[in-house]
Length: 234
Image (cartoon, rainbow, N blue to C red; front, top):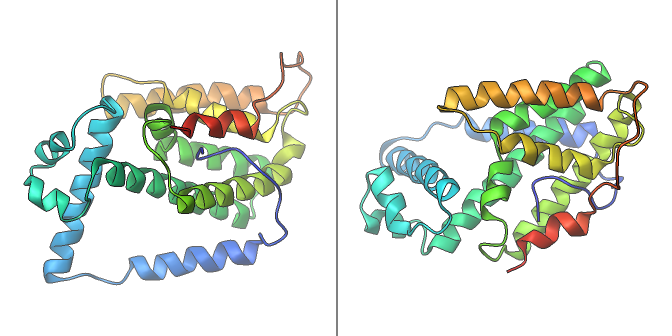
């Protein structure tokens, strides 16, 4: 399983689907929370943010380290997530959902092809979902629902790739995009702000290399979906 990659193109994907589902999410997000629900939502956001920071730094860290980082009691954490594995699944599911949302947004974007593709890449680099693949692949067992969501993400990426392939060098494959995200996610600076700057800098270099023009052919073959997904086997 990976946030990116591709299986097969689906005819069910359309710009109407992209817009309607994105609008539905936006409408839901605008519904205000109050009282205990708002406090619970803030606590959950704090726990997930801490879990991401802790486990990206050390995937072997205990769940108590997350509670300490978040400044909440262990009982408050366990009331939301019954185990470390459940928390890891939540983090990765949220990453997959973010990837799906960004891909749908790109499919609905009516600007010129290169701008759509480049902005899609920039947004996902800033979202940093691929850091979880680098740190967590193979450390827990994904659920069937997670694999289904990953397949959906992969199908959407294939549709987007087919749409933008005319502006990309001809020997680039959709699975190459998966590895590009992971390459950029490996860049780390002295602070979150510096990390973001450096990642966007090197993404710009990579984007220039992806753009269609006369170039030397790429060495080797692109990664396969099996190569990308088998890392999640435990």
